Image 1: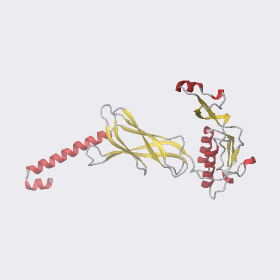
Image 2: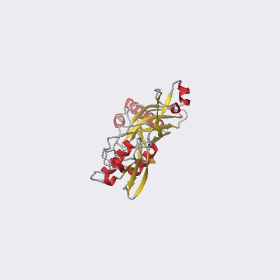
Image 3: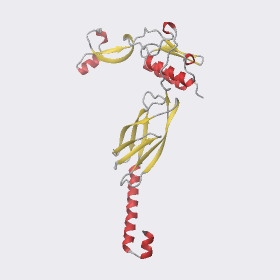
Image 4: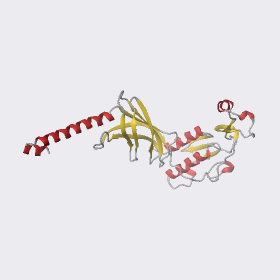
Length: 272
């Protein structure tokens, strides 16, 4: 159109071209301002297993003091990403972003892309950020058979003990049924909610289970580590579980905190 306007001397074409160029300049400036001042952060959950989609908590800070941001899409890797219709000025918007990691070990989110078609959905502008925060990806969970010590040797990992006790780690808060002893009542929480609630504990008297990945029935190290992770994940709440890894021994214990320690050890086992 510009060449036609020059060749023909048509003032109307000059006006149309000038208007289009001005429109593109204004919308381009608005699109860049819309993305300016946005800072992403991804917070990992407590447990991340290889090969499983895991919801991360996305926090997007809009540092602009007067202007909100519109139609913001956040993408990481090959996932579908998440769309935030509005991010108000000087606030933090939150959403869930699903990520999948194929391998166990120490991992990073890597590159995060923020894009938006604002204001007219004609051009999509984007900025990229690199997040170097590290976290541990636990092994893929693979159902297997335990080769433990003592009377539970060669017991299938699917047979999990579900007895409740009074001497283990606090596992739950439940309604009072009348059968629990009075010392199990959670008095502070009961007074707050106007309902009798009791503490639920695990048992510490269960037979300890020692897991050695080299004794499991997998054909590769990854399969054996995955089976060991499945056993830890499903047994550590009900009985003490320990590990033997390359000549090292981690003593048996029960509870969620100890389970996280064992899963971390398995995640890093055998990696260079």
